[in-house]
Length: 357
Ligand SMILES: *Cc1c(COP(=O)(O)O)cnc(C)c1O
Image (tube, rainbow, N blue to C red; front, side, top):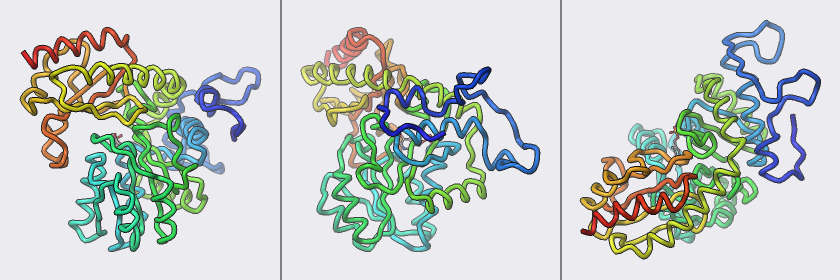
């Protein structure tokens, strides 16, 4: 069902991707568990489509302002986009970005499949220069876990002048805080595992575009390689999406308050926060040892990777051997949840006090 374009995002989060308002129609798209369909229709086989995926795709498509395809995970979506790039072509990407995306690029480059140019996305002139002979410009903004901001509009204009496609991984911002297609990007990628699903219980990915031709190629790739979403996961993500605006609003308000308080704590050497969203990074004044101590001293904050759930989680990023060497050893990435901010702060403050003392 195509949505009324004048509706606000909070309305679309609730209303998009619903069955029609006809008597006896369920209000919610049911879980359709089917591997095959009676022949003669549009679906035919479970790998080609599913009404439950479609409902999720309609809702996320309405929020991003494009046509959406769901994938089995964020990385399946990333891989499907990178597969569009011709043999040996150049991809520009942030030096700080989701580790799995960087690892895919490194893997493809090591096998001679493409050439990768890693850039500092805050240096717009350098990114623009790198676009020159590129086929694809990969952007994350804010970046993970450095929380740097790219000038998406300027970079996209330069990339298009050079004939390159631009894709933005919008996982951190969500379509409520940033709609990259409106800034000129050709493709948006999501790990719906994070804020969109929002409850740390499902893996799912998505790609959104306004380009019909790209959409058809991507759908063809999904059919061909079978990077299809799980039906249950799509259903859970759609259920999560219904409260996205409330969760993001609360988590962001919590993050903004915590950023103020964290900045005054002596154990914290640096607070990184782009001003919006619910991901914060702190650099412990006393480095890796202090950071490792901190993540083991809290009761509410859970020491866990991933982000975007209702519960507050955090981790020292360099505990992963694959994290960029330019990320400080003492950097802790915090995914702020929707709990009471005073409870979150009390828990964090006690743990931070313990780290200094
Ligand atoms: C988690 C994440 C991914 C990968 O998504 P999965 O669903 O874990 O495969 C991609 N990009 C960003 C920014 C992420 O945070």
